Amino acid sequence: MSTQLFSLQGRTALITGSARGLGYGIARGLAQAGARVVLNGTKADTTHAACRVLEGEGLHAHALPFDVTNDAAVAEAFAALDAEGIEVDIVVNNAGIQFRKPMVDLDPADWRRVLEVDLTSAFLVSQQAARRMIARGRGGKIINIASLMSQAARATVAPYTAAKGGIKTLTHSMVAEWAQFNIQANAIGPGYMATDMNEALMNDPAFDAWVKGRTPAKRWGQPDELVGAAVFLASPASNYVNGQLIYVDGGMLAVL
View 1: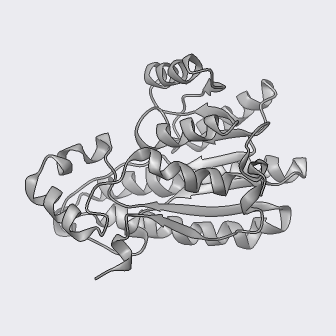
View 2: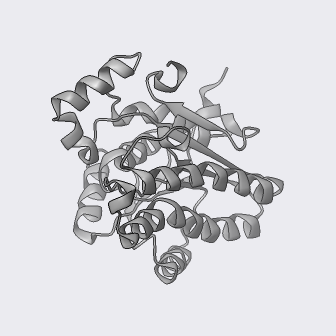
């Protein structure tokens, strides 16, 4: 089997929330597979700094800071790409935040903020990308970053759980409408990953022990362990794969 099936040479991938963490790891992996990557974040300095690191590794990267929850800002970002002749073939909707509080104490503003970043942004970015993919007639790839919480819940993270459950079914809706245009929409569900967002949990001895005890692999996942699934779903190897959610969780959901 030729490795060309997994080559992203000549493709351009936009990864939201990619100045650090899981998004940065995925962006780096896609770039190493041959893609030109467009890094996104809300802070221009960190987004450009991440871009420079990839460029220093000889990878093809472009920085595009914008707020993925603002529909006008998303439309303007895609218009800016159009003006530069940059055609996005692959979208990775990775931007996400977490907020922990019991539901009885949860401020509705915090509920809305998590859903805007973790769910609505995927709709806004994918809508703009899909319009262009359809018009070009070449299809494309959309990869939504879901979670273990797309399938199971934990206390104190209701907004995140609702958003990630929504990501799963939003992916299905994308398939229902866009598969006919040769657009494949799928999702990746990370388990507990060693990222900045989880640093406090990793440093909590009780929670760290729970993760390692509950996960058959007996450890936290590493951001670069999402790269294989991302490259597969972004590449020609997955051209007839649509509406799937691949869990990369060390086996956590497979066992009681």
